[in-house]
Each structure stands twice: as C-alpha cells, then as structure tokens.
Length: 156
Image (cartoon, rainbow, N blue to C red; front, side, top):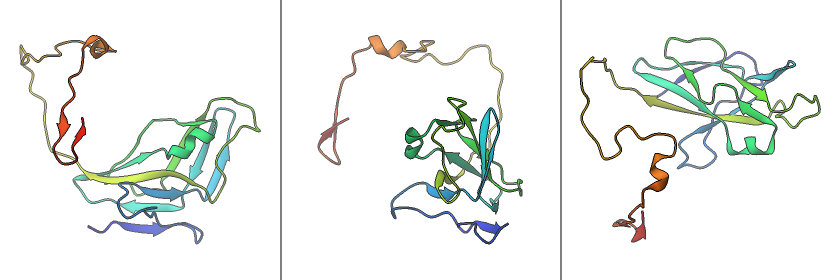
C-alpha cells in the first residue's frame, strides 16, 4: 500500500521506520507553537489515507524525557482529512523552561491501519464471560496461570 504525502514546507520529513520491523514510522516536528496550556507541533505534511484505513499517532517512548503528554493520548487521522498533521501536547508543568521537543526532533509515530465496518445492535442481554462486569483492577485478585509459548518455549 502507498500513502500519498504532500509536503507543505520544504523542510518536512517523510515518516520513516527506525528499524525495518518497527510498526510505527517516526514523525518529525517542523513548527512549534507554545501557549500557556499546551505545545503544538506541525509536521509540515498532509496525508491521503485510503478509505477504510485510519492513521493513528502515538507518542514515542522519548516522551518520558520531556514534561509533555500527548493531549488526546492517541491521535486519529481519518481518511477524509487533508490538513497538516499536528500534534498537541499538554504541559505537565507550565514552566516555560520545561523539557519539550524542538523543531527537527522526532515527536511521535504514525501507524496506518485498516478498520472494520460494523454497526451496533441493541439487545436485552450480553453473553456471559469469566470476567463479567469486573473493571478497574478487577483482575488483580485473579491468579494468572502461565503457559508456555510454543513458538519460543517461554512463558506467556
């Protein structure tokens, strides 16, 4: 599959995988806007994602070296969006000297994935499961049984 990319500025960097087996492709900041509440980075690119696919933008692990969190946790780029891809980060502290990314830094990673067509069906009952309605740490009290991964001989 090929994703069409439009460079909005000459300095824009086409997303690349750091390693051939990486799922995500790194995206690079080309602009930076700082406000009292957030820092927003542009990547100088717009994408043409095929219908039936979605672009998902995740923070890179290097975010732990900053005082930032990706504002919407995972950004969703729909196939009909043609604007510049931008990432907005909340500032955990609002000190202007807090650690952040700079223009030219890799600031996130994008994964293009298909999504299924589905619709909801309203029903009176749902099938029972072992977990049931347990939530928010409900499996903490369950003793997990480990099994061997037959491919590697390691425990799952």
